[in-house]
Amino acid sequence: MTRNRASADGVPQPLMATYYAQRASAGLIIAEAATPNAVGQTYPNITAIHDATHVAGWRGVTDAVHAAGGRMFLQLQHGGRVGHPATSGLTPVAPSPVPLPETIFTPSGHRPSVVPREMTAADIRTTVADFAAAARNAIDAGFAGVEVHSANGHLLHQFLATNTNRRTDAYGGSVAARIRFAVEVTEAVADAIGAERVGVRISPGTTVNGVEEDDTELLYPAFVEALAALGPAYLHLVHADPDQPLFRHIRENWPTTLMANPVLGPELPADGGAHAAGRLLTAGADLIALGRPFLANPDLVTRLRTGAPVNPVRDRFMMYVGGERGYTDYPTLTVA
Image (cartoon, rainbow, N blue to C red; front, side):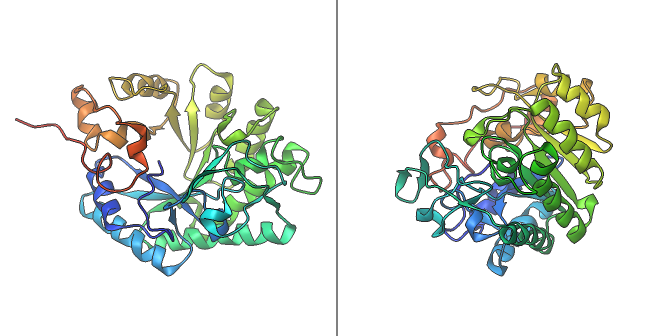
């Protein structure tokens, strides 16, 4: 749930500590995506976790959340081709030189995407190591663990998808080759901080950021099996649909906690996602991720418990402009 409130070089700011502390009643906060290296930056003013200033900035956030009784994981996300030199100062990298099929937001507004540089074997090794180092930094910053972002059209997902991965080496072609990079990243992160501190996010069939999978039903059973062998704490399934065979297959074959992110549609439902969450729990999910309802409802837990109406998310523009408006100024329930 990137909100673009960090500094230009990725350091979390004090306002972010207020935002997350307001939402500390969540069972677990998975903080917005942080980049493990400079070339992984996607948009302006997103967070990072690859140097000491980032660690110190995030420490201010985690301290505030802990003081409010909450707990946090940090999501590690490399944008891959979802990036621009106008933002990071670097040419983005990707599994293959296939550009994002749309414009991308930069500090000077929307710009045409650029052709990413195809990652070499050395780039891949370095990036795996960067994820591991970022995970260690996250623990130093006070997080209880990290979530490896292998979804939504970012770098790890770009390796999974056939339209963005056109490699002919050990990281492209077959399903086993295309899942290799994401598995190696997850293994390195688990080795760095312990598998019990690691979650993995996946989004089967999602076409966000121009990815297209032509073998979703084959890809994800193999990917999930390989991830399960590493023993991470949880698997986070995005846009989970309990009526789909793939959801049922994953639930039957995933040995640890399954976190499900429900399909809520373009408008936030009046119940804050409670009905969709209930269906997923009945179908076997262990935890429910409700990111979007929490944007506008710092007291979402209380609203769900009492059946109170939820605040609607305001104008989408306010999500990304910086400052308190549309970020930390949402009202909470008045308790008599």
